[in-house]
Length: 264
Image (tube, rainbow, N blue to C red; front, side, top):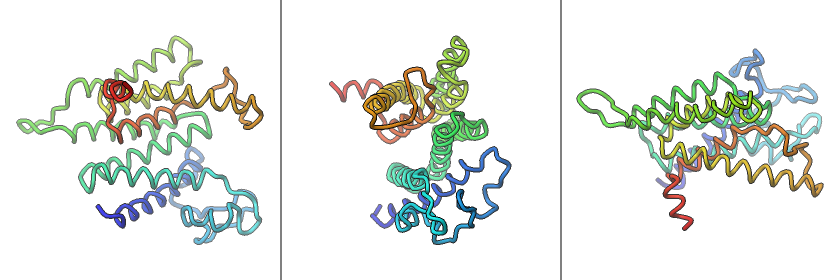
């Protein structure tokens, strides 16, 4: 694997990241993902091709629309960069294998879910369903073939329902105040994708990350350094924390035991 291959995969990722921004923008609006040129939200002008080059257009245009000069959201270059980085890391981990395209699609869907949850505070059912199905497919593909039958480890197969039940329990007893049911649906796919050991660690890590990030944002607001309107009682989207923890677990291979040993 040379630098050129990684760079090509990164560029591919930024292109998919640009498409992900379109999906997040048009999902559940009735608009097609593939049809219709992108337009400036402020002036309505159709964007030219050179205004749509991932990352580079934002940088060269100074983050502003070429026609009216209105500011472009940082969401666009951030999502493009993150997707390019994720694609590169997947390539480094799997190489060109049968799993490579599956993981690219799976992680692209996770990026869509994370960004959509941040913007709308809801996890899109269609995307989380696709994620769960593909995670189950990857689980079966990753197993050894025995007597013509693909037999996944029973605990890895149960990992999805176990993790989903954990979130569903908190959703049920709190009447949806502590957790949304969408988090339970997302955890189903996480369990199948990472297995029982990896899935449990990812869920625990998501709570740690969520607590640290939330307290940090609240501290910044108290110091008048940041304004997002978040308080202790605010509803904070949790899917991005689950997804970030999923990425970390997948790329590091950490489990709760190995992580504790690493810290000790």
